[in-house]
Image 1 (cartoon, rainbow, N blue to C red):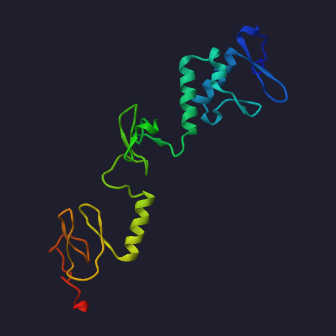
Image 2: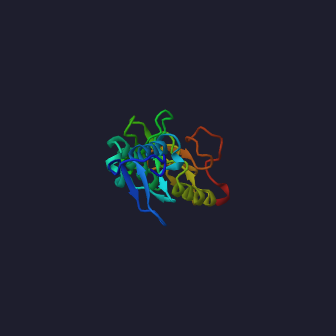
Image 3: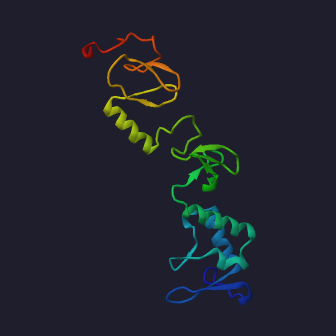
Length: 193
């Protein structure tokens, strides 16, 4: 075995086709290599020989079913772009992409719901870190639009009374955004009369 240097029968060893030469490992060392890369130092995953990853499939006869499943799950995690992990600190499991609906991921392990954008616990309304929402809010800020505090729609004001009735039914002051008749703002722009 290239790791423990013990002489082992070929029935309990496997040969890896490395360059420039092949290396042989015993059952125990392959199993330890995978176990340690998954449980002791995850920076070592995937296990390697001569800087080349050792595929779990090639080691099936030497690894327990549980270790193979863990290695395959870890490989899927590594290959997942913009991975979402459970926001519950005690869990922190990877949330599979098929468990993410409408921007919210549901953890398979503990059922905690996590915002796929900001990676925190699920929250109401749009995510404050959503790039598209931030882009629209930037346009709204530059244009001076007001946002309905009930439904969060943006309202563009051109001329007239500052009393706004949003399509959701909420009435507010366009000047400050508070509920109508709870502020001291003027009711209209006298300069446009």
